[in-house]
View 1 (tube, rainbow, N blue to C red):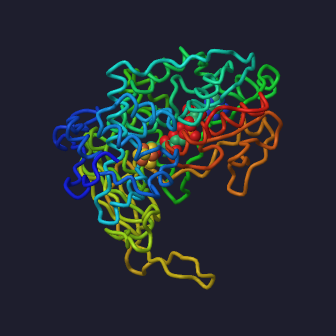
View 2: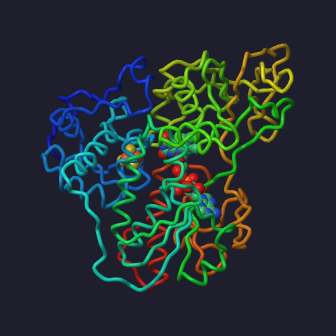
View 3: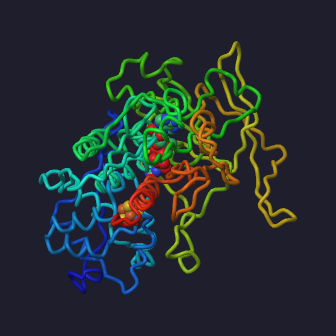
Length: 483
Ligand SMILES: Cc1cc2nc3c(=O)[nH]c(=O)nc-3n(C[C@H](O)[C@H](O)[C@H](O)COP(=O)(O)OP(=O)(O)OC[C@H]3O[C@@H](n4cnc5c(N)ncnc54)[C@H](O)[C@@H]3O)c2cc1C
Ligand code: SF4
């Protein structure tokens, strides 16, 4: 613990943002890092608790008090090494993790947690600037070959760990670029894509071979992978979106959020419109946009719509409005259910809760409005919350573009999963436990959203790392990789 009285003397101060009117003009990141001296002061607020709840709050169990101390001591290089010992890609989580660590921080009991995520981000950004982050090439090659399918954060973490253990890793990705949802879901203004390219280059230097634009189960079969590789890891994400079947949902203005977000990310990457949008270009410009779904994906649609020049953006959520503030004595150090307002919301958006969409209205195939009704949630006979429409509360919203962002129900089963014959769990995800990561089929493993269902980048990294260790153990009989 660098400064025993730090938390008493120094107030919490976090990174700032460019003003909405400035940042809405572009798609770049707009976080303004703290000067190093101020960040070191923030790190000194860490109390190095006897039981560091932040360790458990963080899904990769980042050793937060250790690197806080090292940053305070101005020892950035060792802070970086400690950070990398649990997290392959802190520059991803340092930008887009919801930071359950900060919810679990003891100082959060008073709503002033250590600015853990910002410190994490600045350690790794400095590491890249200083040239401290270089390929970690395995000294000894094992002669074993592993195929990793899917290049999202789970596949990337898994592949990097396996390459560092000396295995020859080939990564198969059906998209034209690596990164999974980091690349084509999450907008550039939350995380710029050169960060993925830079890690990709590091991984290539460590021996990972990337095969993009190759869909396993279609262009390469699962049996052929099993024949050519000693182990196969399926990290294909949870790509099946929750859809709607209300009348009017077939109108051309009712679209999936991922179609909209992917197109914009491809435009930002310099792809031409046709390549970016094989089914026609989508734009929110001069449109009244309604986003259905109150989560991260919905919020990303809000930010993207505003950047494209929407006339209005409304976000609807079927669940009730959560409380502004949690009851700390009931939930701390767990992740609290409370109202979250993202930077995209701050840029301009109407938000409404307890709203159910009934139908889309339009003429000659063109969307004009959404018909909605207010709902209440009441306890049913079995104790579970049930939805009831409130009579007479129907209303219409003008809508030229409706973006469906109601989450993902699990992995796509056509192609790779069907061909592999692996068992699925009750929720439709690939069945594998978090010790062995082994599926029901020999030498076939699974991790990330494909195994656990729609989740977070930090959970994907954790699963990728742990799965790599399980594969290494299966191949070698033992493993030195951390779990
Ligand atoms: C719009 C959006 C915003 C989000 N924002 C955040 C956020 O701010 N913070 C956060 O922590 N999480 C966020 N998430 C969730 C996070 O992105 C995911 O939990 C995470 O990316 C899952 O990682 P993964 O590697 O398991 O899968 P993915 O990232 O989904 O990657 C899977 C990859 O596998 C490929 N693939 C699938 N099948 C095959 C096949 N048969 N052959 C070859 N390749 C295949 C896919 O093309 C894809 O590239 C967001 C999700 C979305 C959709
Ligand atoms: S990865 Fe997420 S939970 Fe872990 S320390 Fe970083 S911000 Fe916190």
